[in-house]
Image 1 (tube, rainbow, N blue to C red):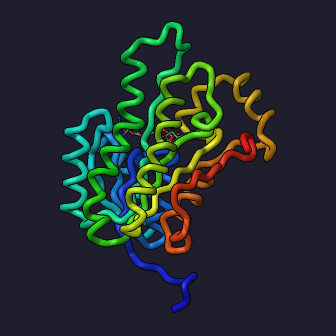
Image 2: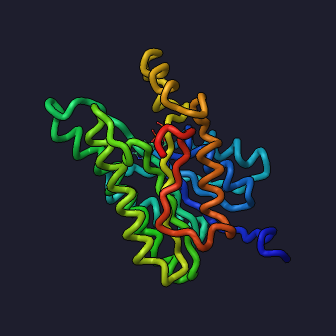
Length: 250
Ligand code: NAP
């Protein structure tokens, strides 16, 4: 079989897979033939997403996880491996915002965003690493953000977590390369999901003006990049930060 046509069925764990970008990633990985484990807090939403994937012929399981809790992460990863086997692909996608200017930001609003977005991603990676090392094959894909590259007023906590994810990506890439595990980040620009639905018309208009491709991204735009980084054809790419932002930051 040709190198480019090769499809090996792997197992993928996707956090924040109940909606938005995470759900699109889960669908894309399932469509590529992988078994997907959908993780988030709300079990009903997860079950709904999983049955949607199954209805199109995909292989999907669910586990509840709360990324703000190290204990929950440990249990969820353990359960995922027990039910689905070793995790070959981890998509650290779940993320939260608690916006506000630094001058008045509560300490808890800073630390809780770091805890969920950055520490949570680190602990998920740590949980799946032994299995990937044993398999001598792995893909870790961290969903960061364009603002982690640019900075953004009113998001010091979120931006710090996303810039931290980029640093984490490069460090893990160096630590895990000898075991044939690649670690990459994807930095979405403005993507139409629940997270951005709350923004005002004025803010959206302003954003659109600085996007050369003159449209907001869709979750599928991110999922396509993730599916590529999760596949066989990206095996020589590690420590990379892949911008999927319509050109808003180059
Ligand atoms: P979203 O629509 O708000 O979905 C967030 C997902 O994460 C949901 O599945 C949610 O499910 C889960 N989640 C939230 N808190 C969690 C927690 N503590 N533990 C476990 N799961 C949790 O977000 P999105 O727009 O798809 O964003 C996905 C990722 O892309 C995030 O990391 C975000 O920062 C990043 N991103 C988004 C944009 C954008 O424009 N949308 C741009 C750049 C980067 P539950 O609520 O059930 O837990």
